[in-house]
Image (cartoon, rainbow, N blue to C red; front, side):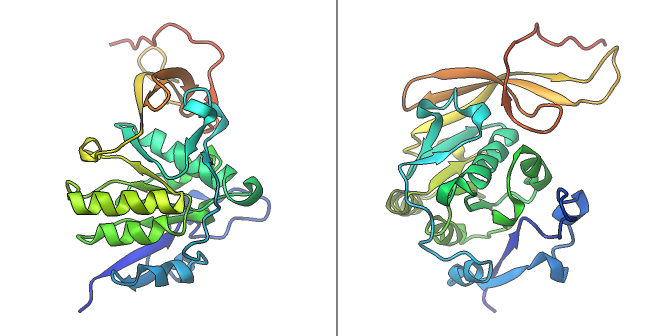
Length: 266
C-alpha cells in the first residue's frame, strides 16, 4: 500500500457572512467532508495541491516576502528575502506570525499569499486568523512521515512560505535539495523545532529574548496579551524590537512603550 499524506486547508469550515471563522470551523474533524481532506501518494504530492486550488509554480515572483507590520522594524529591510531559509528559535507565536504576514499581505498585489505548514499538528490556525491570516490560504500537512522532504519540495514550488518542523535531523542531501528549490522558486523556508539549528545555511534567525504576560493580577486572572522582545540575528546584523505577540485582540503590533517586567505574586 502506498504511503499517503494528508493535506488540509486551514479554512475547514464556512465562516458566517461578514464574520470571522469560528473556533469549531477552523479545527473541525479532519475526516469531515467540509474539511476538504486531500489524499495523495508521497510520490505525487502535487496532486493534493492541485485539488486544493494551488498550482505548482504559481507562487508570486518577487524579491521579498512580506511580514506583519508589527515585525517590520526588527527584520532587516522590513521583509523576508525571497528564496531564503529562516530559523524560528523556540517561539511558536513567531512562526504563526510569519505565516499570518504572508497569508494576509503576500501574493499578487498584496491580496494574500499561500503558505504551507508541515509537521505541526498543533499549529494555531485560530491564532493565525486573529493575527490577520486568511485560513483558506493555509495548507496543513500535520504528519508528513519519513518522506517529508518530498512534501516540502512540492510545496516550495507552489507557495510563498513553508513553515517546517523537521521530524528528524535533516540529511545533507535533503538540505541541499530543498535549499536549491527554495532559491529557485523564491519561497521562504521557515524552520522551527529541535532540529532547526542543525540546518546549515540559515540566513536569518528570529527569537524571543524576553517576554512578559498581561492579564494576571494578585496571583489570578486570565493571560490576555504578551509583550515580547524579538531579536533578529544574521543577515543585516542583530536587531531587536518590542512587539505585542499577540496583543489583547490577538494581533501583532509594535509596542510603543515598555513597562517594567511583570511581577506575579507567589
